[in-house]
Length: 375
Ligand SMILES: Nc1ncnc2c1ncn2[C@@H]1O[C@H](COP(=O)(O)OP(=O)(O)OP(=O)(O)O)[C@@H](O)[C@H]1O
Ligand SMILES: [Mg+2]
Image (tube, rainbow, N blue to C red; front, side, top):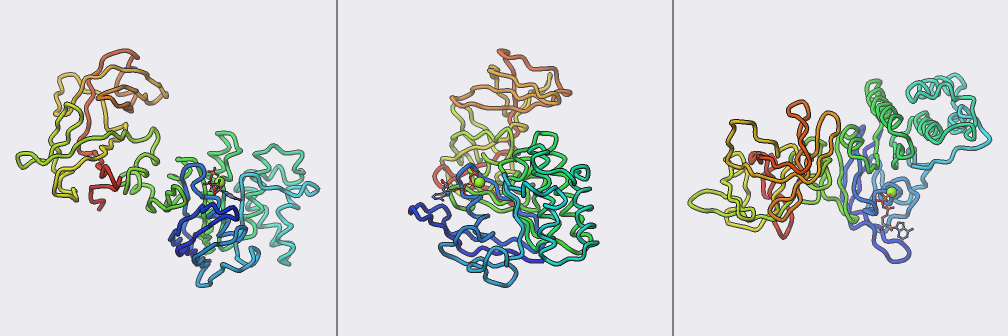
């Protein structure tokens, strides 16, 4: 059992490139923390520093109460699973998983029961006598996961462990990992998990909290729901959520004792639900943000303050919903419309859509920080 604390951690590679710029992050004992961010933002670098596979250039890394900057990987109480984790080719799956446990001098019965449990969890019981060469990539990856799990480490580190699996296996293995985390908690053997992924769904469903990174810096750390509903800045707003939040330059004005958002030639009075949370007192250039699900077709006989007529460029029908792409006020927009609510919207058609102004996000045009109180 161990918390993990990063204090002003920096990484400069030998070629002089600074990949990590002084990050602070505390992961509670037993917490499931997901690291997300675009390719090259230093997720793996951060994870590898925690693992001890990469030297830390500056700052302190604590596991539990202990500063471990200079501790060898094997003494840190961690287990890692990477995207391409090599199994021992001459051993079958059972032997691969048992290997580390034998070194710990565990009783044979204990080794056997741990492997059985993990095999059940990961649906690999039928593979235990197979060698890596006789398994698919996805099966090998699940054995690699099993090998980490059976060690019952204090801290699990995962670097995109599911990215080589096909869509269906990704889902079942993802659920397996979530179950494992929960089960360990229930039997009082909670493990701290740090999980790197590109995948929005993995981040949203697995994480107790999500840490969003960009360019070697932390942009926001929060619960999945809070990140989605209260992004602290434009970067997080655009990164979390799929399809992404619409973001457009606009002008926020205080006119006749009312807050008005001006978008091209359109002016809308902001509702109290938004203005009560406004952190500024003067007019400002802003980024207006609105999620695709908050732009919806106007119902027949309905009139709203913020309805606009648009020309549909493209429609993507996803079965239960449709993504409607259109250009408006020199910007590209996307609206997400449930398919059972309305008939399929046709490409090339003209539609009335309405913006739910209660759901607006506003970011400072220069600093890109949210202008709304998140509480
Ligand atoms: N050994 C190295 N020497 C110099 N630069 C490196 C080295 N390893 C990584 N980098 C650089 O550090 C930055 C962060 O790399 P890292 O692999 O941590 O990114 P990442 O967030 O894991 O990306 P991805 O999602 O593509 O896996 C990148 O710009 C990368 O080019
Ligand atoms: Mg990586």
